[in-house]
Image 1 (cartoon, helix red, strand yellow):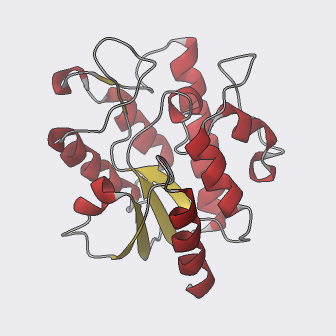
Image 2: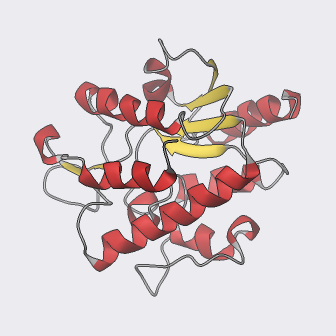
Image 3: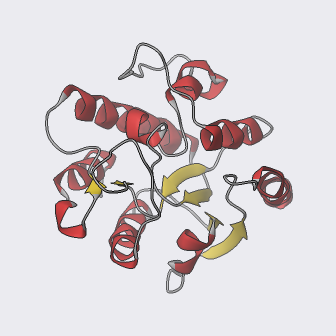
Length: 208
């Protein structure tokens, strides 16, 4: 059986330099990459024990969120304060914990539901603008195709029967994946209300 540890190792081994300005958060043995791999392992292990049926699929890591924690749609502030993460051994890169708006919005919505979806990004590495790591850009088509391979690998580990695409980029790559999928507006850039309404409707009408 394909394991979470094998999945993370494959992530860490991926060459993103061939794609342009994309950072592999999990590559190497720096303090930062070790923290991200540890946090992702801890998160995915907890989610595996909860047997989620829904996958909430975002676009790519943000520099104030997943780029620091290693966990999609999760900032350091959310990781430290949200009840879902309490009691587990998560680590932090910064002493002054960073906050990300999209992460805060997502976890504020998920707080309303006992059953949490698994969260992932269609492109699991950090696409940045130019030479500045502290920026975000939208993943290109080559990056999205690579990311789709990791979604398929993740589906070998988790028993997902519905994928909720958070934004048009992840939605565009769900064709050919033989799993029911739905669309919600991404919470960034004024999409908070539509994201809240869309995800709430899906979660309320899903039979767990």
